[in-house]
Structures are given as C-alpha cells and as structure tokens.
Length: 380
Image (cartoon, rainbow, N blue to C red; front, top):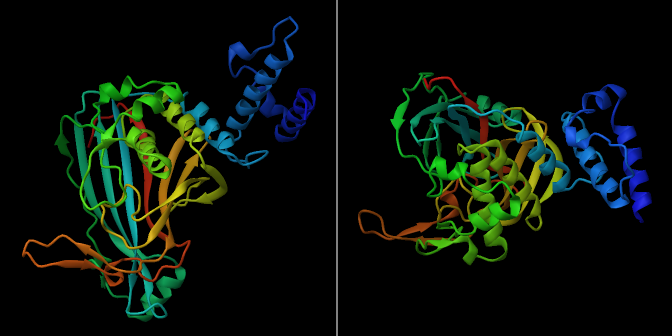
C-alpha cells in the first residue's frame, strides 16, 4: 500500500467513525494541528492525519475502537487523554483487592467465594499523607456460586485454604493512619515527578531500578531491571508501569509516557472490551507472559499454578481501572518451603491454594482502582 492509498483509507475511516458534531468538537484539538495556507509535504500530511485519527478516537471513548486492535490504538489514546488531566495536593487512591477462593472438598461440589480488602491512600509531593485499610465482607463470586452457598445454608463463615472468610464483616470507617517518607520502588514523589516524559527515556531510567524482580527464586536477589532479559524484563517494567499509572503520585505527563512505553513492549496486545469487578467497562490489555504467582498481588513463593496478567483501562480518560490474573495452569505439584518458626519443614501443595479447583481462564485475583485521582481535599 502506497502513502496515497493510506491517506484515502484513513480519511474513509474518519468519515465513518465521526458524526459532524464529533468533528466540530475536535476541530481545535490542538492549535498546532490547524491547517495553514501552504502545501504540506506528503509525509508531513500523513503524520498530521495519523495524529488527527488519535484525536478523533480520544473524544469517543465509549465506542468500539476503529481499525485493528493494537496497543497503539488504545494505549496511545489513553496516553493522549491522561496528559490533559488535572493535578492537586494529594494523589488519592481507593484500591480494592480481591481473591477468589474455592469452598469445598472437590472440584464437582465446590463453590467460589470472593474475599476483598479496601486500601485508601493519600500522598502529597513530600511523601506524606495517610493510609486506611478496611476488611470488606466476603461474598459468593457469581450467581451460580450464590445458589450453592444458599443451598449450603448461607453460612456467615466459611473455611478456605488460608483460614476463614466472614460474610458479615462490620461496615466501620477506618481511621487514616499518618505516614511520612513514602517511596515507590525507592523513588520519592519528587523523584517521580522528575521522571522523563518521553517513553524511551522513561524506559531507560526504569531499567536502572533495583529490586527483587523474580516471580520465583530460592532467595531474594536485588538487581536492576536492565540485568533481566525477555519475559522477565517485560514483567518488571509492566509492574513498575502499573504503579506509575495507578498508585504513585506522578504528574499526567509521566503517566502518559508510561502508557506509551507499555505500547512498545514486545507482545503487548489489546483483547477487546470487558467489565472489571466493579462493573465498569474498559479495554483489556494483555501482557505476554505467564508467572508462577499473580504479579504484584503476592510474595513468592506462593502459588503452584501459572497466571496471565491483564489490565483493564479506560482510554477515554487514561485511567487504569483494574489488574487481573487469570489461571493459565491450575495448581499442581509441590514445592519445599523454608522451615517455619518452629523449625519444622514445610511443603506447598495444591490443597493449600485458594484456586485449587479453578479452570484455565478463570479469575484468581484482581485489584481494582475505584478512585485514582489528584485532589485538594484533606484526607479523612
């Protein structure tokens, strides 16, 4: 396909995607995009039309993204829109972390129960703020599980691999505990604010971050991300990018760069639209890796299965709605663990895993960001 054919196809796609009202809304998207009275070289015209295409998509966030589903078609739209976001005194997040447990003795008769914890955090540019943690009531995972739970007498307490879950946790407002000197991957909020806003420069800076990036290793080893290769490097970079997008107090331009960086990682792809555990609609971004533990939600060694990490994003405002880990391989085999406090040897087995009866593709864990925004309101 030559450049003239490409231009014709892009013009046709724009005409089909946008109504006259939408076209009017984006007419002054950026002043530098307004036409001037001179003949533009074809290469420049192509670049300008591509930019206009992204602008057109960004003002229609609730519609299906046109054309081929690629990271450039969702992540770059999110990058454009998040860059327009406001700032404030505090970065405030409300994160709800959930885990899906199997209740029962066998795969045929078991039902699934969801445990949830809510974490509220406020952080200012000095690294001070406060945190609050709330235990939310357990509940059946879906309608079928609710029927089985009711058939079992609708117990208010159930036993799972890790202990007991309670369906009647008190709905008490938790006090906000003051914190100071908060850091993210060893970086203070001021250092985060100074991160590069160009995706390649941001990636190069993050590659120097030191940490324990292994999904499973016999001992903790701190090393820079740059020392990793292939899937391990992608896993580490995506972990850091997720924190920059949702939990860390970084300016909109850095979040934009994080989205653009993610779009350059090998194997990252868009898998259409879905709803997150809070019922919000977003676009699924899948990471090209499997891991022995749900990324970022547990400390290794924990699981005996493997998991696929997905993000759910809202390109319309450039927010990360949720992270979720789907079972790739159910728990199997065993693994020796270090001795416990009593000095006795320990062994990890499938019976100790919350998802021991899960099938491939079923959800194991998730984290949703009900709130992730800058605010001037005082923490409460």
